[in-house]
Amino acid sequence: MAATTFNGSVATIKTQGYIGNFAHHQDFGSTSLPLTKKGSKIDLGLSGNWSRKRGFCSIQASLSRATTVSDTPVNSTSVDSTKKTREAALILIRHGESLWNEKNLFTGCVDVPLTKKGVEEAIEAGKRISNIPVDMIYTSTLIRAQMTTMLAMTQHRRKKVPIVLHNESQQAESWSQIFSQETEKQCIPVVTAWQLNERMYGELQGLNKQETADKYGKEQVHEWRRSYDVPPPNGESLEMCAERAVAYFKEHIEPQLQAGKNVMIAAHGNSLRSIIMYLDKLTSQEVISLELSTGIPMLYIVKEEKYIRRGSPAAPSEPSVYAYTKNLAQYRQKLDEMVH
Image 1: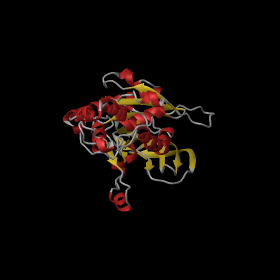
Image 2: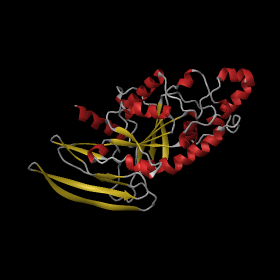
Image 3: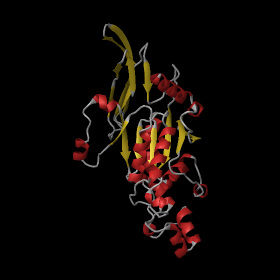
Image 4: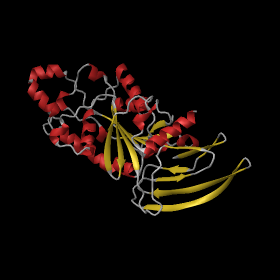
């Protein structure tokens, strides 16, 4: 999305949709369109592409004497090159502390909200990513992940509103449509997916972890919690959780990243461990020792189909942490120019 400010007015050209079943892609090239605004002549250079699979069409406008901020960092391309080099940011956030985390209970797929501490962790996570562009958000169907998503985005400097997409039925999709183009330009689509849920702990859900260890033995409970392929009674192993989470990532999220979209995923310890296992090419033995703290975002740079882990961004007062790439540095600079 490109938003161009000119003498206090905003000019944006964009159409978008996020549901599609076609794999056809078409470039419509570039052209130039002269416009007149309050007696001033504006020359817009238009370029973009249409993807039926993603149902997305974007038109970028260049304008002299204007400040342009795009949530998708500008891609560097060679004039003679037929293949563009795309770069995107991937942000992973484990939800903040939940009420059952606080009580030391096995939570799994039980839908439990955040504690006060969890709310604060989500807000802090939002501050850490406040200068990183976000085009789309994926989260689980569980409230603790969705609360973390919404609270984190209240801190983002672009002030875009996360909007949950409801496509579970034709009526739900129809009722949740946005009919203002100006409003839609200031929204970020949020997709919920059960495949990103925490792994299902079966008969352990709701039990106190210490009492369960006393009953079954520490070694048995440790095997249920930290082994790769041993599930708890009537529950999922990490391997089973990884099968659904990684499959969803490959089918739905990875194409967005490869198209240059900046994506945030707010999910759970085991679903995110599964995705990180795929991103970092970890073995089944390496992933069982991977621990993720609640409310701490992790940044990856996606370029040329490679995932480069950059760790967790520090506080927004430290400009250097966002200079992992030239594009991210330019994006933050443009945000600063908007404020000043």
